[in-house]
Image (cartoon, rainbow, N blue to C red; front, side, top):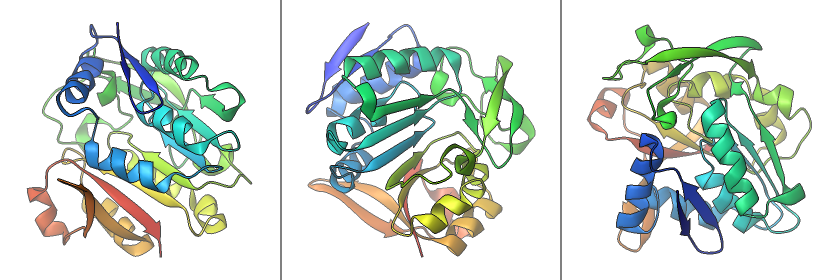
Length: 248
């Protein structure tokens, strides 16, 4: 295990897990993980905010959010992978989460019920409920387990939400379809959504363009910049990106 201290928060990595090791390498190299996205979330998460981390993995962004929301804010961390969930719990304790944190072991989708979570060896960050026929990922899952799936709206039927991060390895569109009521109730909500080249498709692109002001988060020397998501035909040339999506 290796513990890394950031600006006011900490994260513990199990270096025997490939997913943890890859993130740890980024942190050692740059002092951060997904540097531009980290900088953006540091800017937009304010004291008193409610931050929801969908696909929290071991809790990098949940821990960052805990350092930003203050005593009056709240963080909700959602993760379906049992092994990652255990490490998420450990990291939230490490950051003194207390009553400011709610943890949910579940997948999110546009329906309720049991779903298959595909696992990829010891890389918990690649876990996905998306079937192999619906993705272009160059590696195969090693096994699958049954997990519970819920909709965002059912988990937060009346709660104020300010910022949501969604990184669910191809199930992003289903998560968005399951949070229609939340988006209507929170017109100023900001979403940070992964745009993964393994899972891009026209339906996802059209949904983003029809419902949000959508911009890519780009790393620059002095921070980050936001640029429009290009036409769908051009997205195949984009690397793995995170998007800032604001309701229109």
